[in-house]
Image (tube, rainbow, N blue to C red; front, top):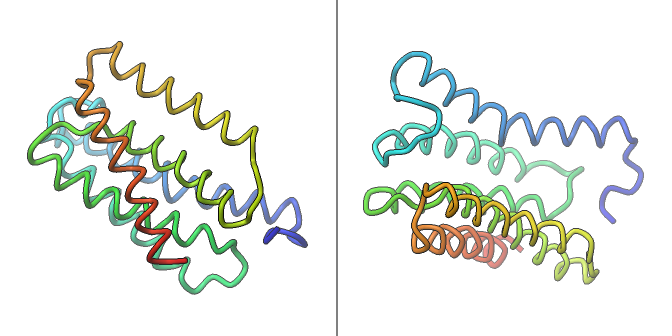
Length: 174
C-alpha cells in the first residue's frame, strides 16, 4: 500500500495531525464559542447555533484539502476524503437554512463511503473495516433517533449528503 516504508512513529504523527485538524480544533472552537457565550451549549440544538461551527469546521477541512494537494508522501485517497468532508460542510451549512440536518449522519456516512471507495480504488476487500464502519454508522444514526435529536428525514438527508459528497469528491479528484 501507499504507507509502505513509513516508520510507525511517522504513521502515528500523521494520524495525530489528521485528528488534530479535522476533529480537535473544530471541537475546541465550539467549546470556545460556548464559553464566550456565542452559543448556548455545545450540543448545537438549534439551526442558528450551528452556523458558526459549520463555517469554522469548513475552514479547517478546506485547509486540510488544500495542503493535501501538495503532499507527496500520503495516500491518494486522502485527497478525495479531505475534499469530500469539505464539500459536506458546504452542503450541511446550506441545508441548515432549511432543516436541522444531522451532522452525525453526514460524518458517519462520509466515513462509510470513504472506506467503500478506498476498497474500490485499491481493489481490496477490507471486510473488518467495512463491518466496523457499518456498525458505527448504524449506532450513531440510531442514537440520534433514540435521543430525539433528529427526525428520520433529517438523519436520512444527512446520511445521503455525507455519502454523496464523498462520491462526488472521488469522481472529481481520482
